[in-house]
Amino acid sequence: MKKEIISTWLRELQEDICQQLEAADGKGKFVEDAWERPGGGGGYSRVIEGQHIEKGGVNFSAIHGMMPKKISDKLGLEQATFFATGVSIVLHPQNPMVPIIHMNVRYFEMDNGIWWFGGGIDLTPHYVNEKDAQTFHRKLKKVCDNHHPEYYPKFKEWADNYFYVRHRKETRGIGGIFFDRLDKGKENEFTKAQRFDFLKAVGKSFCDIYIPMLEDHKNDAFGEQEKNWQYLRRGRYVEFNLVWDKGTKFGLDTDGRTESILMSLPPMARWQYMHQPTPGSREAKTLACLVKEKDWITHTIS
Image (cartoon, rainbow, N blue to C red; front, side):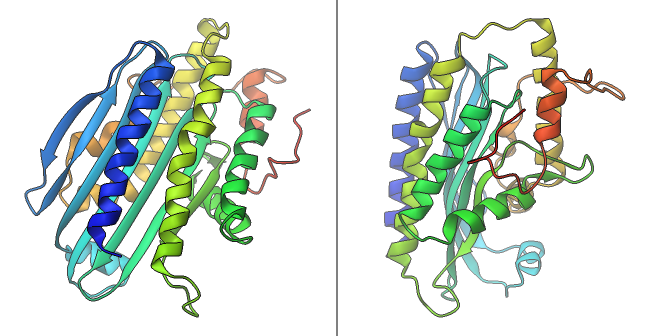
C-alpha cells in the first residue's frame, strides 16, 4: 500500500470532520492555513472559533526528509529518509460541561522498509460524567473489538499510562485508547491493509463519539465557579502537552510548524497556587477519578 493512498485518505478525513464539526457548532467556520516545511512536505492547519467550540484545530500534515539524529536515536533507528502523515485534533469547548477531546491518527515509514501506524482518542472532561465516560469507552471498545479482541484492553492501558501527568500524579482525563508502532507484528500476523483499516475505523469514529456529547451539554447551565475550574483543568492539559507529549516534541524536533504543533493549547487557562477543591464538591469528585486503571465501562461514580 503506497503512502500516497494513506495520505490522501487522511486529508479526506480532515475535510469530513471539519464539515461535521461546523454543522454541530452552528456558527463557527474553519479557517485553513496551508504551510510548507523547509525540510520537505507540509500540511493544512484548520482552526475554528465558534459559539460552542471556543477553540478547535483539525490539522493535516505530510512531511518527509532525512530523519534528525536526535529523533532516530530516541526511536532506536538508524538515520534514513522518512515520511510521516497524519491528522491531529484538539477541541476546547465553551461550556465547562462539555469535555475536551483529542484524536491523532498517523502513519510513518522510512526508506529502509520500516513502517507503522499510530494514534488514538482520549477524553478530558472538566467534570467527569459517568454516563459520558461509559459511552465513550464502550464506543471505543466496539471499534477495537471489530478488529482484534486484544486491542481495547491493550490500548486502553497504553492510554492510561501515556496520558499521565507524572508531576501531578493524575491522569489528564478519563483516558481512551493509544497505540503506536503498529506494524506487521512479531509473527507477521498483520498486513498493512489490516492495520490501515483499524486506523480508518478510529478516525471515522471521532464525530460519532464527540458530537453527541457536544449536543447533550453545550447548553448546560454553568457559572463563575465552573468556568474557573475549566481554566484550571485546561492548565493541566497545557502542562501535559508541553512537558510530556511525544507528538509535540517530535514536531518541534523535526522543524515542524510551531503554530500547528501548539494548536492543541487552549485559548485561556489558569494556574492557581496550591489550589484544592472543596471536599465533597463536583470538582473534588472529578479529581478523585483521575487515576490509572479505572474500568470506565462498568464503574459507577458514587
